[in-house]
Image (cartoon, rainbow, N blue to C red; front, side, top):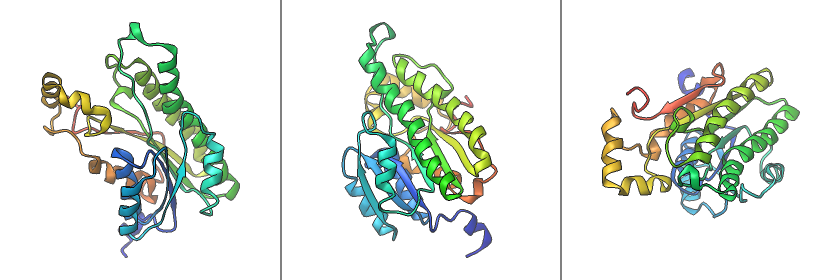
Length: 254
């Protein structure tokens, strides 16, 4: 193996990925496994297809059943540590969205979105960081931000608030945890083919408007995030801290 390839290797590392059973989370898990990491998949449903792909890459996957709106992050990490010696990489991928005019948003919708997209991210990151510090191990935390970490959007007040907050939280944790050799960064996907964007893609007018703004001329596919994920999870990014990396086909450039 050349030095360059070793830099991007995730061999002998374990990655915890939330929401790994579908969409972007599945792509993250498969990408990290393909680079050599074992996977802890956290979610409400067994990640059957993800597990098969991870096994095909020659890596191990353990499933931790948890609803991030309710489960205690420290319990999730404790369960993961029953299977592995440490969690080296955390990908905070799971997120939810509720589309309503701001005048119609109720407290229940607001709390659900913010609890999953922001509160759970912080406390899961804290739990992972604590076991890294205790073990004196370096680590990587990758948050999944959004175009709405940069922009306001419409009809997604709680989502925009949570993803804007996530960008700030990423920078804060990068500042505090860099001395512990824990890198905290974020990936901000543009418009991707996922369950969350089904309604947008089905709306002929809105779909055309979105594509007209993307220089790449297409919606992103989950696999388009693989390179960014492996980079931020690997030693190649050891001097990268507090970055919000857009993977958007050029959306923000236009």
